Image (cartoon, rainbow, N blue to C red; front, side, top):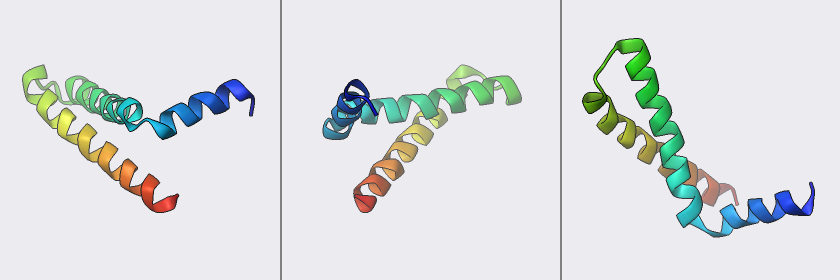
Length: 69
């Protein structure tokens, strides 16, 4: 692994304020997009569930990261 990739990786590992919002946003957007495309739900009903899904996903990922390190 080159030094640039290692520095980026260590930046996300040492700063949870950077990776936690990203860990919430990506799954939340994926959930919302799937609900909009597959189920035809409105954005107003899909967005709150997407946010909850993203927060739970990020919390479980953070817990697993903490336990495994």
